Amino acid sequence: MLRRKIEQQLLTWKAQEEKKCLVVKGARQVGKTWIIEKFARENYQNVITLNFIENPGYAAIFGGDLDVDSLIRQISVRVKGAHLVPGETLLFLDEIQHCPKARTALKFLAIDKRFDVIASGSLLGLNYKEVPSFPVGYTDQLEMYSLDFEEFLWAMEISEESILSLKQDFEEKREVPAAIHQQMMDLFRQYILVGGMPSVVWDYVNHHDLARVLHMQRNILRDYEDDIAKYAEGSEKAKARACFLSIPRQLAKDYKKFQYSLVEKRGTAKKFGGSLQWLYDAGTIQFCYNLGQPELPFEGNVEEDCFKVYMRDTGLLIAMLEDGVQEDILDGNLGIYKGAIYENIIADIFGKAGKKLYFYEKSSGMEIDFFIRHLRKATAVEVKSAENTKAKSLTNLMKSGAVEQAIKLSGRNVERRGNTVNYPLYMAMFL
Image (cartoon, rainbow, N blue to C red; front, top):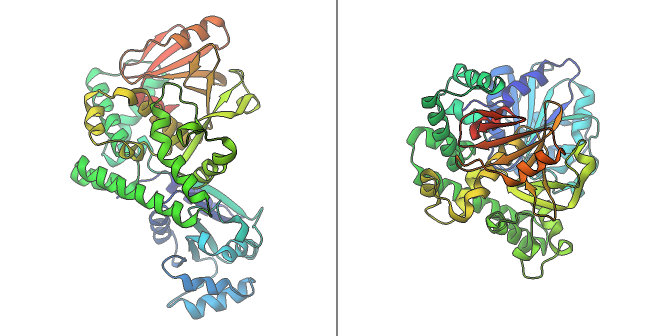
């Protein structure tokens, strides 16, 4: 059974005296339904689950008046064995994107307070036109992703004590014992290949078969393409699919700024910008924006028309590439994808930690992979796929005095040189 960090967040929400309805958002197949049902079984005497995909007829519950007494009557009639006991019942509205009026009803359920309510769904940002009235101010929201690297380590039965020891090495900038460093680098490479989709991780834990992993990942990718065909509107279907399929080509270029011409010859932001936003709203990709100046506050320095695009799950990115890439990663022979895959995994780790993504690029050819706020300072982060940590752009930036501190993430052990610290790639989880 996979352990997820969101479980503690659900417990924190439940403990609130004046709680709102909770909306758990996330891409398809990241484990929302499973984790909420587990939480419900362990913490409530009565659980009523309305899954609007499995049972489309449940939408009729919200077809009339939305006052809570009316909803109780409808649920009692339409849901066999429903026990609506005030203070002891969780109402779980699953796949709520398929019942827009249920989203409106969250306001009245939050005001009423007789029952705890959790709603979950994917593609929640895509059907906003169908929602009669959003419950603004009456919901709390949690974003759920596929497993992060630490959760993957838990699944691989790495102990809390081992992870804490690594964190102490990170904080004290202390070299990790060689055998542990090699073990962690091996686990990190496995995480790159497997990714964090729960069904894939669980299968890998039980079988350690990368061929099975690749088959499952490609099935998930087909599901994502099916979602595009099903939910994107009109001409957006073909454009969103073209953008989605262009991501490996985008990342294979030395110049990784998203180029619409790689989607279609003479492609433009006007034509494809909305399609990229559709993929972002679906939880499939994340944006990394260029900074006009490498300084805080980052948001005030963003150049919105200059950005890179990364996949939300690096395992799925690997599955989009040609056969044989898995073996190349294990052997350290990545060819044109050498930097792209490692940049994507760090973007994935940062994104799952709640960080917005920024990079820095100048016309002179200087490019820094990421900028983060670390120890209250703007910090340059360079990502290297091997033990070679030479980074000309970073060296020049530090010499210029524009940035006070920098981090390199690579295959090398912990090492400090002046205001630049090299951490092994797996320590990105502590940033």
